[in-house]
Image 1 (cartoon, helix red, strand yellow):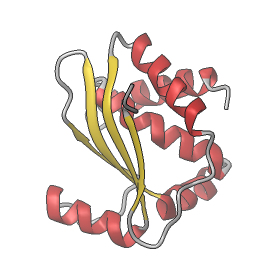
Image 2 (cartoon, rainbow, N blue to C red):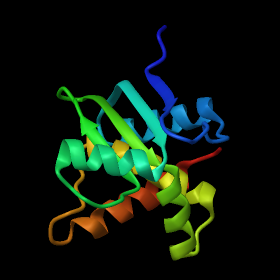
Image 3 (tube, one colour):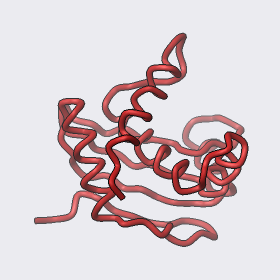
Image 4 (cartoon, rainbow, N blue to C red):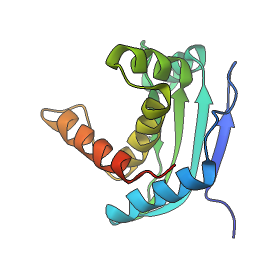
Length: 142
């Protein structure tokens, strides 16, 4: 069976030290809990220079962010590409007093939750997203 997940890098970063099979199982478990199934997903780990370029080029946003999710979901089948700035993940972890590893896992699942249709920009949506992130993180065994 073809692997649904791609783990890639852009810019000056290396792949994070993760237990990728465990992370993939976790992502599938979270998707299933939201009534979805995992299709092809690419995680592109990058640096801040790359994330701001992507943000400017594709979204016309001129700021750094931890993740940009390009959603290609088809019905229940989750599909998409997620750019994650490891620089911003580290900065955010320090700012909120979290470990880098926990913050990275939070951002990884944040993208999946976006693919599941959970937003975080409108009134009250941030709290809903954070609650879903916390529930997902509680399931992680890696």
